[in-house]
Length: 113
Image (cartoon, rainbow, N blue to C red; front, side):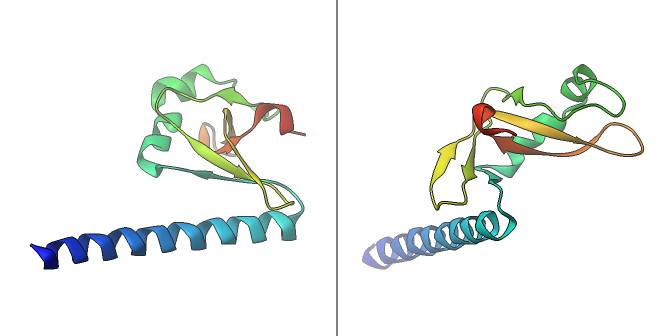
């Protein structure tokens, strides 16, 4: 039983270390690119954004990329150039040249330029 507890603790430690490394990479990218960078907390949940019904509700054609409300259960972080982060409250869908949307990223509505 002790061995199982140790294994569980090591898994948690490894996951925490991976998340920390990802966060550090996002801060570095924000600083280098001189703009905030978003990261989803759960990529599978974030796929809801590109759900057919949601995509169909978004404007068609070459439209300005404006923040939209996050669907329920979808969360993310926005890493700023100054080394701080904030909880995402919206997302921006990126149009595909062939129609529809190819991806989306988390944003903080009042920080979008």
